[in-house]
Length: 170
Image 1 (cartoon, rainbow, N blue to C red):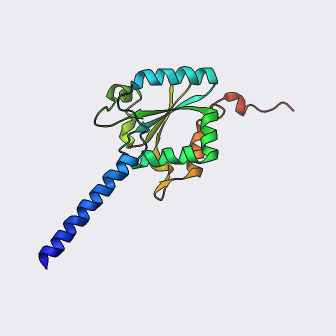
Image 2: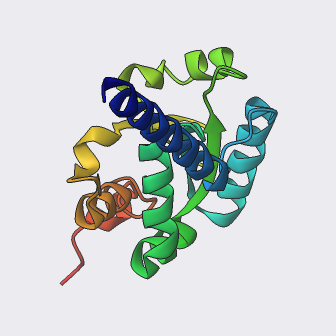
């Protein structure tokens, strides 16, 4: 009887591992370990400058379930997706065993200290405006739409434009 229970437990464990591997294989690949992050960031900054937007660096990896959950939220929610498209040039920066992008992350002030995903906002000149710990945007087993929108609005070009705060002439 003990052998049957042991065999059943091993079979269940093997099936669970196989199912997890299948899920990982089906997960979207939004981070490219082979990408040249420095060159990609330079291109994103140029594009943001030309379009009067900021750059949102989403730093993480395809191994990170929270990274994938965040990406799913902001790409499937119409309001968040539109707000991002209107105000940011978005770039996924890889952090994985294959490529930790250590020099790039050092130049950004070591944002990985907050865990993953982590977000860095740059202006159209490439200046780092903000590093966001994603833990503050979480709610339950995902991210809060309201908290994410508040973060995006708080670091948008309009929010940082002094003209937004000038009193209107009466």
